Length: 399
Image 1 (spheres, rainbow, N blue to C red):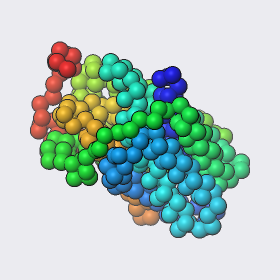
Image 2 (cartoon, helix red, strand yellow):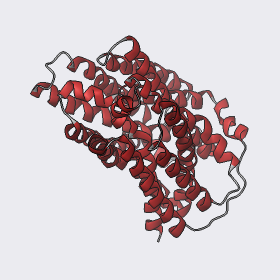
Image 3 (cartoon, rainbow, N blue to C red):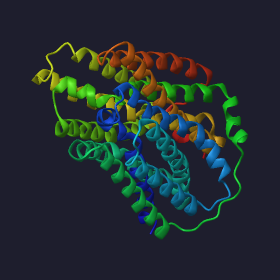
């Protein structure tokens, strides 16, 4: 029964992940239909991410006395309704508004589902339980986003949002039927969540999370027009490219956890940031090659793979570091890290829009690479504040 409950939570993560990220694949269609620029349409990513970042700690604390099943079901239903409403809006301003409501549902579901998944398993199985819950978001990159992009190309972006709403309803029904109705003890206040940031190293790690995600989302928000210009592909080809990106994200997630255990945080994070920087910069350099040529297409595929690995390897690495520097405040720091991830995504989308307003598509890679260079500086400062424990010492450390 535990497996089915975890898969239900993973299904919810798949629906929320698809709804959160599929906008990048349908951005051009939305811009054309609602008569706004692509850069302006990118604000849909910004508003979702920033709403999530600000609202998540507040809403989770405010709903600490609500039963976990009821909260998960309610969050998924709210997310579904917001996405269904997005399919019927007549203006860009209304679409922005419903994206805010969708973000509120995601902001509640994501941390609550993680905590619920951990509570279902024994202490020795919690890591794997969390992995099953999280894999839904990764699969969203592999399957949900490419399919949503292709559906948008054939039937319009509004049908893509209806698909997301349907996925969320299915997950909500599964949660209602399979999850136990467990009451929860009273949680902390918003201020108690923030108390952990009095640690300078925690603030630095969270800042690094923001910068790393900002770097990726400078490009990811506008990945469809970028890929179209580099490869000359249309809907099916772009969907395939995004599927490659999603497949590489699974490898990146697994590699990040393995690297943390085998090589430690400092070396692993430095390498991943360097890979990310080189990948983002490569997108700008490929524009020097003839668009649609074999060289351009192959270079783009290789860059997509390394970019995805460098991005997704950072998720387990950052969690590994935060648990290490704040072992008594794991829930709080991981909740704040989730907000930092969303803040980075929103800031990256906004920075990308600024680059497009004053530059061009080839400039996006340079902008993302700049963010990674700042992240490397922050990494150096952060590791100087707290000595890094070797992975071998970590294994011998008492639990």
